[in-house]
Length: 480
Image 1 (spheres, rainbow, N blue to C red):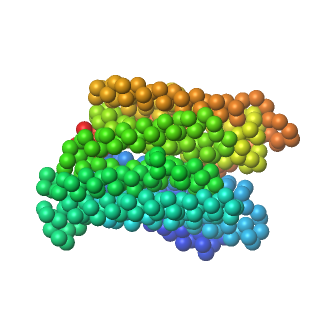
Image 2 (image 1 turned 45 degrees about the vertical axis):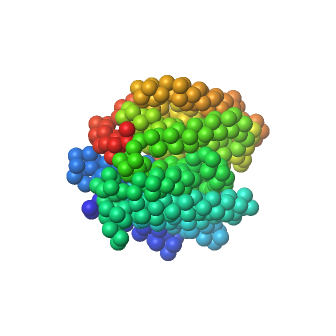
Image 3 (image 1 turned 90 degrees about the vertical axis):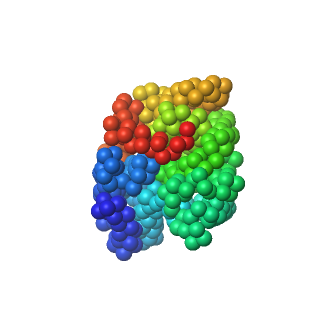
C-alpha cells in the first residue's frame, strides 16, 4: 500500500511544486520524481508477481508502460524545457506550466490501471483527456490549438460512448447485485452468469467504441495524428506510450466481463474488425507521410491494431503477446519520439524531406532514432519482434490461418513504410549548415534508459514479468 500511495503522491506533489518554484529547481525534481515513481511501480509489480502487493496482475501489467514513460520523460523534460523555451519570464511561465501539467498528467495515467471500479475508471480517463489537451495546446501555435480542440471534441464524444457502456453494465448488474450496487469489476465477474446478457453485449460495444476512440483504434482514430504531431515531444511520448495503454486497460476490463457473461464470440469478432481496419489504414498511411511525428502517430495506430488482433485470436500465446506488445510499444515509441524531438530541434523542421543524415549530425540521437524505427518496424532482436511473433504464433495456434496471414501481410506493408522514412532521415549526410555533434546530457540518458528496455525485452522476458503475464491471461481471458 505504501508503494501505491508513493507512486500517486510523488507526481501529484511535483505538479504543485512545479507551479510555485522556479523551473531550474522543479526540472531536476521532475527527473528524480519520474525515476522514483518508476522504481515504486516496479517494486509493487515484483511484489504482485508473488501475490503480495499489486491490485491484480492486469493492473500490474498496465502500470509498466507508465513506469517506462514517466521514468524517462522526467529526464528528457529536463533538456526539453530549456531547448524549447526562451530564457525570459515568458519562457519561465511556459516551463512552469509544462512541468506542472506533465506531472499531473503522469499522476492521472498511473491512477487509471489502479482502478477496478468501472465508474471511477471512466472518471480517471476523462481526467487524462483534460490534462493532455492542456498540454497539447501549450505551444500556442494555430496547429496546436486546432489539434487540442479536435482532440477534446473527439475524445469527449468517445468517452460519452464509454459512459453509456458503464451505465449499461450497471443496468446489467441490477438483477443479481441490487439496485444500488457498487460498480466494482470483481462483483460483475462473480455475478457474470446472472447478468442481463443483452445489456452486457451493448455495454461492451459502447465501451469498445468509447475507449477505443481514446486508444486510437480506427475508424475512431482521427484525433491521434494531429494531437501527437502538434503536441510537445514529451507529451506525444506520454500520449502514445501510456495513454493508449490506459484505454486498452479499460477495454480489457469490459471484455473479461463480456466473455464470461455472453461468451467469447462477440469480443473476438469486434476486436478483429477494429484491429484489421486499424492495421490497414495505418500501414498505407505510413507509406505517404511527410511529417516525422505524424509518421510515429500512424505507427501507434498500427500497433494498437496489432494488439486488438492478438486479443481477437484468443489463444493464450496471442493474448500474452498482445499484453507484452503494449509494454514493448510504449518503450519503443517513447524512444522514437524522444530521438525525433532531438532531430526536429536540430533541423528546425518536422518535415521528413528536411531531415537528412541524422546519424552523422547527431551520432547518439540519430542512431537511437534509427534503432527505435527498426524496433517499431518489427525487426529482431527488439521486444516488438518477440511480441508480434507471439501474436502471429497464437493466431496460427488458434486455427485462424487466413486472418493471421492477412495480419502478417499488413505488417509487411507497415514495415516497408517505417523502414523507408527511417532510412531517409538517418542515412547520408546533412545538407546546408547544420551543426554536427551533441553533448551527453539528461535527454541522452533518458533515451539510453529507454533503449535498454527496448532491447532487453527482446533478448529476455524476466521471470517475474512472465508470471504476471500468465496471471493476466487468466483475468483477460477467461477470454479465450
